[in-house]
Structures are given as C-alpha cells and as structure tokens.
Image (cartoon, rainbow, N blue to C red; front, side, top):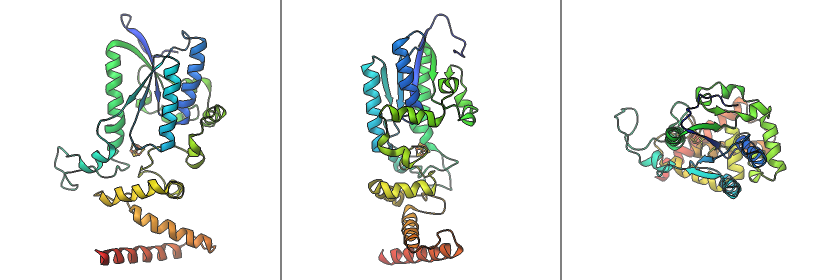
Length: 286
Ligand code: SF4
C-alpha cells in the first residue's frame, strides 16, 4: 500500500486529512473501523483538519462530532487554523508589493485566478505542518479522493510521495461515500441535498445556482455576504455584486410566479433596466 521510500531510522506516522466533506468523512470513519480491528493493517496516528473559518454552521457541528469520535478512539485530532481570519485578509491585509491595478490594503474577493484564501488559510498551513511532521517521521497521508474523481488524482498535489488513496483502492465513488455517511447518521443538516460540493459559504466561485440556494436557505449568511461585498474593493462576481444578484434572483422569482422565462432576451433586457434603476435610486439616496 505504501508508495513512498521510507527512511529506516524514522518511525512511520499515519495522518488522515479530513476536510469535513463526505469523501474524507467516509474514509475516516471506515479507516477507523478497520484500524480498531486491525491496527497494524490500518495504522492511524493523527487526523488533521484545516479550519478556514467560513464553513457552514452544520459543517462546524460535523467537525466537532468527528473530533469527538477520533479523540475518544485515542487518535490525535489536530485543527490547523490561521490566527488571521478570512475577513482580515480580505479587508485589512497590507500587501508587500505595489500593484497599480489593485488597492494596497485587502485582497478583496478571491477570483478564479487569485485564490489567496486557499493558500493563506489552507494549503500553506497544511504544508508547513506536514513538513514539520516529516522531519521526525516517515509520513503517510490518507487522502479522501473518491474512485470517480480521476481528474483530481492527476493533480500534482494529490500525487506527492507518501500520499495514499484508499477510496480509489476500495472503488468507493462519491455516491458510495455519501451513502456510507448517511447510513451512519451523518447528514450535515441537509447540505449535500442542496449543494454537490460543500465549500465556504461565502465563496464567489460558487455557481449562480448554488447562490440561489444559499439565498433561499441561508438568509442570514446571504445578508452577511451582501455586507462583506459592500466593503470589498472588487465585485463579488465579475458581472454582479451581491446586491445585483439580490435584484436578479427576486426578479426571477417574480417571473417564475407569472410563468415567464428567466432565460430569454426579454428577461435580460428587463433585468438590466432594473439594475440601472436600482443603481440610480441608490445613487440618489447617498
Ligand atoms: S472555497 Fe472559495 S472562499 Fe473557500 S478557500 Fe476555496 S476558493 Fe476560497
């Protein structure tokens, strides 16, 4: 099973990377079950979880539950978290280098090209932690990539020395993982009924469909998103602020109630007029 060149003078050390999602949860629970029956065949020393601080409340509860399960089983559960928050980097971080195109303070919303949050709040911290472990141990990292996520395993960061993908070996697909979790009473408060992937609630890389779901089911988070967007120097989506999306989604609801299209040219023409009018009225208020 090992795919790394071990150093004989170092001890082996097995770490499970838990994201809190369905795949790593299924892997973690099943690996723990096997570990309890056969510790040598399924070694496990530590679970690591990286907390970005913008997870859905149901995900926060889910992680607390996992922590309790692993801790009670005698497995160390480590939470990695940047002492600075998402909002600090977004609004207050002072950039080192001058870039005439962007303000000096605050990264603003992440974009497809610049996902500062992934590196500052996750990958940099996890790499640093794993490198420290590697100084002492031969580290084997259990990764929850499902058997039908072939394209993700091709990525270089999923193929590092010491990475192990048991779900691939077991042939467990994403659907199998979700069913496994549901069968054991883990339902994330229904998040997987609403979203295919559960990521930060505030992510601007979400699709419009996911944002409709967020607005409908999490009005408090939607209101917080709009507040953050009003403070940001860049727009939430390239073509829409959160306030614009509010106008669009409300307009869509009106049209759907009347049995009218929300994809036609007419819809987009009327939407543009509405957005212009909203802007004028807001401008007049200031
Ligand atoms: S899910 Fe979105 S907001 Fe969260 S870390 Fe990833 S890119 Fe950033």
